[in-house]
Amino acid sequence: MGKETEDYAVARFKINACFQITGRGFIFARKIKQGNIEKGQFLDLGSLGFLKKIKIHFIEMIPKPGNNTFEEHFAFGTHQLNEEEKTFLKTQDFSNLLFDVTQDK
Image 1 (cartoon, rainbow, N blue to C red):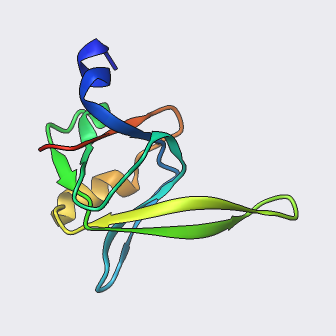
Image 2 (image 1 turned 180 degrees about the vertical axis):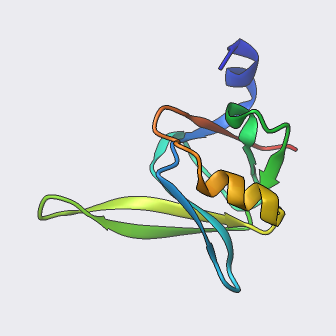
């Protein structure tokens, strides 16, 4: 991510998993690394080579079991991906990628 990316990002998100929940949308889950994420902002998929930003339609906190503790992770969802994009995202390794969340599309 270059300087121009850092200038417009309101948050950075590291994705651990993504999946579809029938009737809810496509979900991205993990921890926020920097900033705050709000409903109505956009996840920039540029880290994967997508020239697409998707609107965050809902946000939920989910417990993730750890060593006798629960960490707070966030899950947010969207309805703006087609089936081909969802299939592609489900097969990706996100371990070394940070995704920007922006205010504007």
